Each structure stands twice: as C-alpha cells, then as structure tokens.
Image (cartoon, rainbow, N blue to C red):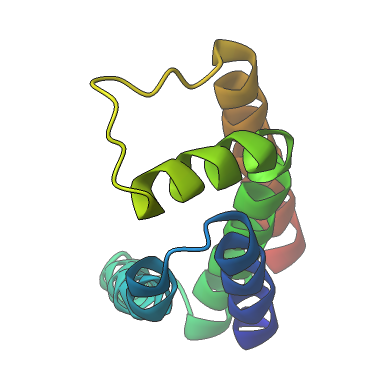
Length: 115
C-alpha cells in the first residue's frame, strides 16, 4: 500500500510540476523521509505496519490536498523552465488550509484504522 501511495503521489506531482530534475529527485526524497518516519515510529514503539499505513494515508492526503493548486504549480513550473523566477510565489491560503486539513484527516483515518 505504501508503494502504491508513493507511485500515485509522485506520478501526480510529476504531471503537475513538469521539471525533470524535480520529478527525478522527488521520489527519492519521499523514500528517505518515509524511512525516517518508520524508524522514528519504531523508536516510539509503533509497528512497521502501522507506520506504513500512516505514511501511505498521509501521502494520499497530500495528493488530494494539492489537487486544487495543480494549475498554479504547472504554471510556475513552466515559468521556471523558461527561466522566469518570481521574487515570491503566492500560494492561496485556502488551498494551503485544504491541503493541511486533508493531510490531517487522512492521517487521523490511518491512526484509527491501524489500531
């Protein structure tokens, strides 16, 4: 389930942010972060299965949460590919709130299911 969540999330991000160096490094970053999360969970006394469920649900929550911003991410990626850099990228607060809420809801669902 964790691998499926990682593939779905990284595929969506590769489509939304079409910068080659981003989508070639991004999955490895998540593998390292997931390994760290599992190690931290083991240190705190949680099982490997429970931590993988939490990581999987959090990734799917992040994918769902970033869905409203996909057009902005694609636009910014095209600008970066053309050499345009902005001083500031204004990420809409409503999108940020939705992203945070979806990650929290999915993580809470994972904790309830992992019991």
